Length: 342
Image 1 (tube, helix red, strand yellow):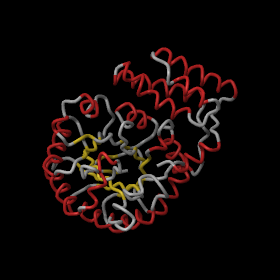
Image 2 (cartoon, rainbow, N blue to C red):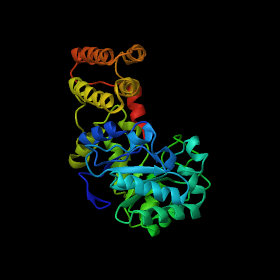
Image 3 (cartoon, rainbow, N blue to C red):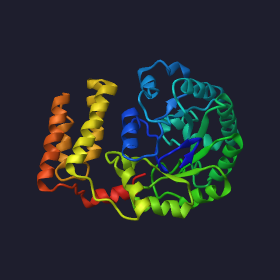
């Protein structure tokens, strides 16, 4: 797929997720079949450039191209400066966050709160595009501020006029947060109104759902967020299904253990063992959710204090699963959750 001046292996995108899409996760998803992975959002506040968190979010050492960095803020000048700063530090695509529904972001009129002010949207987009004329700029939005104000079609036209190269849309309003079902009709309408690539996001948790959303909306690609947490192989599953019409067999327990251990090693190296140990807990929980005995395992695992103990625990857990059968079997309630995951 041609996207923002780059040739991608497919039309599958990793959604930017704060606290999740760090460099280890992005690299893993790309290895597992994602065409592009967008970074967790980086603040446009220059006062934070020197913080450890911001420096890690701007660390792209060894990352497979193209490197897409999402910036967040509400001031056109600061957003322009942030775009230049991140391009100077390795970003090959700048993505603008106008889709985050979190209160701490919206309360400062950033993220999806910006959808309330279309004039400001235009000023921000114009400023960022002008600031990095040799770098593709993309945009992530929601369908609107609330159900009475679904203005994604107007925002999409503003974006296209400003020179935005591609648009990702989460199929809910800001007021909806993650409740209800994604509005694929609205996404499809936007796709029909603009000539730039449009990426559909929301409630895509299985290969069949990915195919159905692509067919229903006519979009150029799909963006996967929560459904990839603890299941990064979803990208190769979707890629295979779109190419062949056949579903892949579930991964072997031994393969999941190998993927998880590699992921954890990257986390320990990236954050340092102490912080990496803590961050690894949520990923281990996602990898094991819905598997037999996982509730008691997670409870015990969250109390472990060393890397060796953590690695030993997952070896034992997946080793016992492999004794009962080589392929994973998720509980029925977890399958339902996967269908609803964004």
